[in-house]
Image (cartoon, rainbow, N blue to C red; front, side, top):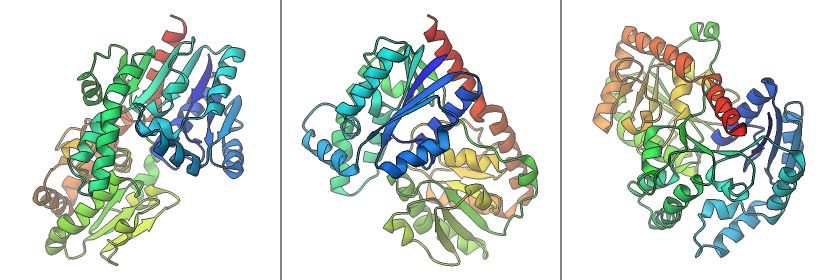
Length: 397
């Protein structure tokens, strides 16, 4: 097939979850023999050059449009009273619309794949078979944020965006032949507004370290890890809650307990949690698996979540037993007590972490079952093969 992939951010380097998904997708489709063109925004010439260096041998054609942050902020502010979600306004560009229109008119694509609703306006009405990777219900995610955030300005921001997103995501989804979402709860949330008969459950996968590397890991006593981009509100809330209310309870039971917060762009609130040697904030690291393979337990104490949580699957792939909240596991479907331990309040999470640190045999058993679960259900190939089949179906319909 000849496929156009439309993304908001450059997928290389894959520093965010959405960028990683698009990067792995275009590589998968190209390796399967499809001709893949990519179009996305870049902030400057350096980002453009880096993207082309990383994917020029993968994509048949790469088209970029410059969109500096200051312009995005301005146009979002000026269009605030409108109905379009702020995330869509942030990425609005006449140049991008012209570029995509020209590509579709001249290149004869069999199918167009658009990643996330923020880019849906560019492709929702094109006369070509089309699919959109929605990933999550943004309305569901925003509603969960509103239930936890305390800052009044942030609360207002989420409330305004949720009011825009809820009708928009349901309406725009209907304009595509198929839409991909991570799990049934995301589909159910959108269907509270209108039916979504074109929805397909098809989350993204995760990199899986070689089993030899995993089995050679040297686990450090008392080490607890969490990974993720530490500038997102969901992760900031999770690590703050764990560091302030949960980890001290673990420390009273486990003398050698340590908490590693591993991930890029830690906000000031996250950096302030550092309390060496007990709590370490790493910032960006070359490979998060290096830290996961040293830890004894992974945690995902998310109180706000939707879709699939990379941090959980990354830990499971490293045979690391995890303690997660119900909402964090919602889009993954790991079996509690077999692949993961589920706990939802501070006392229960602290007890679950302490229990795993004190029972290495149980921790090892859960970790190995978790790895097997990932190998069966959460590799990139497992989900992209299904996505590829759906794209082929709509292309030939």
